[in-house]
Length: 314
Image (cartoon, rainbow, N blue to C red):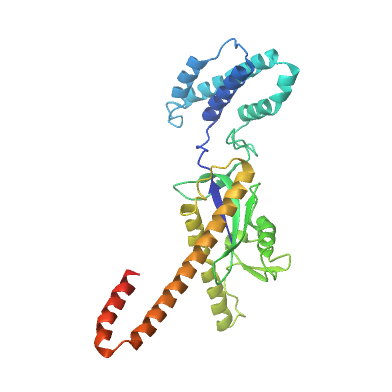
């Protein structure tokens, strides 16, 4: 069993300035939809601030970028007050949740928890990857459970909150047990799941330093289990690259769950089709071999060459 990340393609790398400009565009849409004439749209000024926010990490441009960000927050406040004054009570109630979201985006600080990273996918969160090329990824965490020998995916779960891996075990094992006649006795996980030894009667095995009391056979068995666990890593890569899990175009957390379920189903179906084709190919070889045995000796060499050519093509 292993946790991995689901990245949403329609979510760009979030910055405060980018989100503030998106909020302003959303407010312009609300004003147009309700037929409100704004005192000022700030369209030309926003272009100037967008340029100021470029390369905001450069030491010579930090001061200018901070001033631009502060001004964008002020513009959002002005537009929200201007629109709310001109809306009726029914219209205000209609856009109440949107205004609340915009206010939270503008007021959030760098070290706040439960931050908003996207306006249209507000449920996503930042997941620390710990890699040099990509420190964080923005999306939802998912758990994948596979069978030990067959590598068939038997359970998938998307997690709405960014919890520690050990706290995702209950949901993942419950999803896997739904598709089994017998409950899972032992789950082999990586070191990210440290913290729990047993979950709902299932023993959790995590790689650890060998104990002195273990015999040679016991050590070999443990090593064999943990080597087998590594087989889930290429499965994750295949369902991400081959079955469109890394690019999720479905909206909301429900969309993440549907996309995850469809990707796992496609992987299992492809695996079943490959096994079926192998059996069919083996049956054809056996059938052609029996026919070849019945042919006369003179013609057998000729048909054997054709048989080898056909085997290579397959």
